[in-house]
Image (cartoon, rainbow, N blue to C red; front, side, top):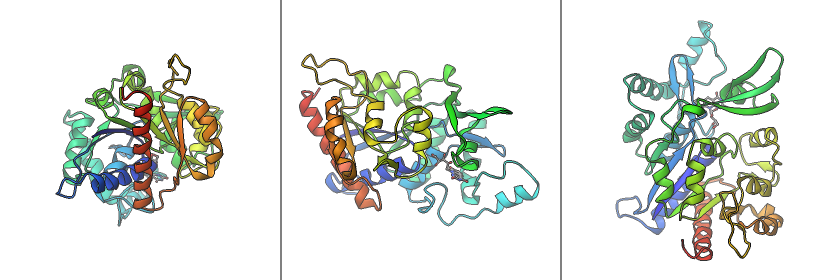
Length: 344
Ligand code: FO1
C-alpha cells in the first residue's frame, strides 16, 4: 500500500513512528521493514538560517525520530546532546543566543549547509542525510524553494519576526496577528510531492500543528488541489484533545487565525472533501475522515454532520504502541471511507 502523510515536527514524527511500527507488524517484508511504501511530505516553513547554518527543524525531527536519533524528551534535536558550541557562541556575544543549537545537531546543519551551498536542492540534501538515518520512509520537503514562516506581531517597533523566534524566544506568548509564508509567491512543490498525493492509496494528516505545519504545506501551490482531487481517502487525526493541544502551542496558532481550539473546529477548518448531500457535491475541503480522542466523543456527530466520517479513539501517543494503535485506527477509517466513496 502507498501511504502519503503531510507532517510537521514533533507530533507528526511520533505518529509516523507508530505508523511504521504498525505497518511492520501487519505487512512485514521479512527484513524488519514493511512492504508498504510511506512517503512523508514535510513542512519546511520552520526552516531558519542561523549562525551561517541552514536548519530544517521539521525535516530533522522526522528524520531523527524515524531514524532512532531523536531526543525523546525534547522531540527535537539529538539524543545525548550537548550545547558547547552554543555556549561558545554566546561567549562571543553572537546573537541569537535563544536558539538551542546542539553539538551533534550542528553536524547535520553543516552537511546540509555545505550541500545546499554546492547547489544541491533541499530534496537531494534530505535524501543524502537519510542514507545515514534510514528512516524507513521517503522524506520529501514540501518545496525546494526557500520558504519561511514569519509571525506578524502587535509590537510597535517591529511588525514580523521569524517563527522560530516567536516559538522559542517568546514561547508563542506574543499575540500573533497573522502568519506569513515568506517566499510563497515564487515557490513550487518539491519533486515528487504532487505525485505522492495523487498516486497514494491513503493520505494521512497526522496530529501536527494545523496552522504552522500542515497549514503551511497546504499553502504550497497545487498541494491543496492535489489533495482534493486524489482518489485516495484523506484521513486526519486531531492534534487537539479535550480542548487543548497535546503538545506544543497549536492553541496560540489557532487563536491567531480565529479557529477555536477544539477537535471539531479543526475538522471544520480543514473542511469536508465531499458533502453528504445526495448529489455528493464538492465539500470544498480536504477531509474524508477525522479521528478524535475519546475525551471528545461528544463531537463525533457534529463532525459527521459536516460530511466527514468521524471516530473517537485514544489519541495520546505516550508510547510507540499507542501511536501504532492510532495509525491502525486511521487506516481502518480510510478503508471504510473508501467503501463509502465507492473506492474511487
Ligand atoms: N524548540 C524549542 O522549544 N527550543 C529550542 O531551543 C529549539 C531548538 C531547535 C534546534 C533545532 C531544531 O531542529 C529544532 C529546534 N526546536 C527548538 C524545535 C523547533 O522550534 C521546531 O520548529 C518546533 O519543533 C516546531 O515544529
